Image 1: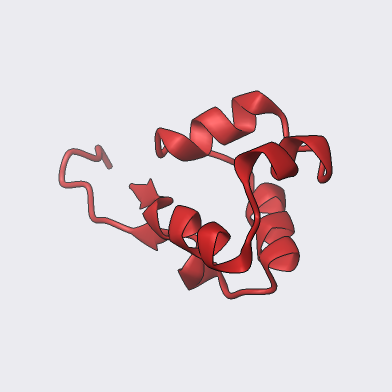
Image 2 (image 1 turned 90 degrees about the horizontal axis):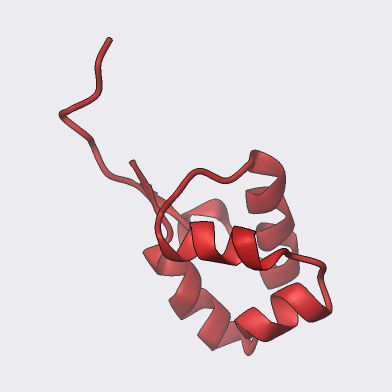
Length: 71
């Protein structure tokens, strides 16, 4: 599972609000909702966040092993 817990701290540190993401940078409210609830988003979205926040991917998301994944 990919978790976006780091994103909210990084955004706060960089002075970027959720409101700014969807008004200035064109993120949909649905994408913000997906990030809030650790749902899947595209790599394009992650790339865009890294560029906006001028940060590394590790400052946005982390991988948490999910033992319930089927092969």
